[in-house]
Length: 257
Length: 234
Image (tube, rainbow over all chains, first blue to last red):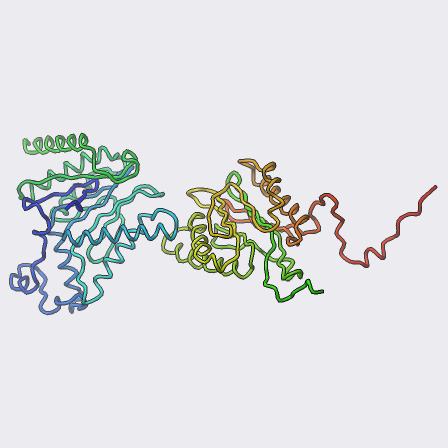
């Protein structure tokens, strides 16, 4: 599952070790009978080519659930860098990554220049959306945070299972995404360097984990910035350790209050 | 007049030039399109627009170079829409190269792509017959360019001003026209920089005369009616 490289973010692995296990959406029939949620599929959720009377496509919403049930992934764009991460069904994620690589390669071979991040995210989003148009295909059960460094500097995009893609300063997907987003909003990203960002993100993940009531977790982080020579790489071990320590200290200070 | 061969394919003997200067590029070309020995068009425009900021100088087969330019203009238009900003000169050159290389057996056209974009500034790319693409500080092409290699070796320098660059291009095309039978007519230049595009026109009869060149004559009538040479005084 080397897929889940955290952006400047990280990935929270649940005790089961594989986010896949926890993230498969329950089959629609069961969902209906367990109904504690506001939506009722009742017949309109059997195919991605069916709208419900209130204009929703349930299959796409269920696909999003697959992502929501998986480990958190966070990405932030600091003033000098970022990265790509996947949360959700790992196999789906692999497919998307393969497609992204292929699109990037093809762009470069036709246009003779590295693919701009915007273009790549649009192509990936378009592919994800494609799988929401036909009854014989199921939507991707994973969200993607895509980051890159091109001529216009570092950029961060997020692509959801519905095929929506937007550019972000900070993004989070998976279990603790709401809490993560709240924490990210407190940060002053435009003034933060990647080195500082690594520490901040570690703190956020440690904080979230607390609330998620999961057992052990492993923090993985990767980045693209000037320091990594504009190439994607795992955050160097010493910085990672520094981040973990700082995060744990921050947590203790919080608990002590 | 067997030499005329009016059915010969239109080719642009041509002299084409592209030069970078401090802030942009200057493209230049002559204006002769020949069908065998007959000049089919003495005032053609060989500098063709691909996008707002990228132009191409065409040489070789008139038809082939036009069609290639048309395809690339179309692709670049779509590319610009997708990107949401002007295409770069590098991408334009690469698209031309794709067509030139993949159809090398059928095409006979040498092109010089020149333009300005916000990332790299002014750039010139030469794409000769086989479909190679070479980024150069200046490029020359067409049949007339044979006479300019030595000239550029001596006259070219880095970081010229816009005026110096344009003067260099006009002078060079003019020299080539003087020696190459397949080049002639007027000199057209295109200057591309961050501010935009400027097209200039230099009529053939206003160009400087080189070694052994005769004054241009518009009509035989002018010669016949002119006063004869003064009788010698002893």
